[in-house]
Amino acid sequence: MVSRREDDADRRVKRLALTEAGQAAVSRIAAARLEGLTRLVAPLTPEQRGALSAALAPLLPAHSDPCAAVRPEDPR
Image (tube, rainbow, N blue to C red):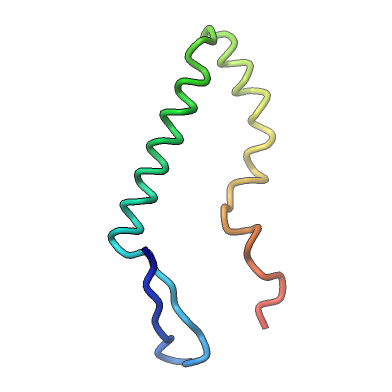
């Protein structure tokens, strides 16, 4: 799922990357998430969907960086 290698310039640094299997897993998860959200809002009218979208819009900027929660504050 993930490959790991040493950085060319600094051997203390480890570089991680998704393998093809990891990328496929992420794609499957994203598709399942979209399908679940689609089913969740399916019973709503277009007006209700619009209201839900407007209500959720202020929350999106706080979640635009999925790595923010795991990124160290001080990289040293």
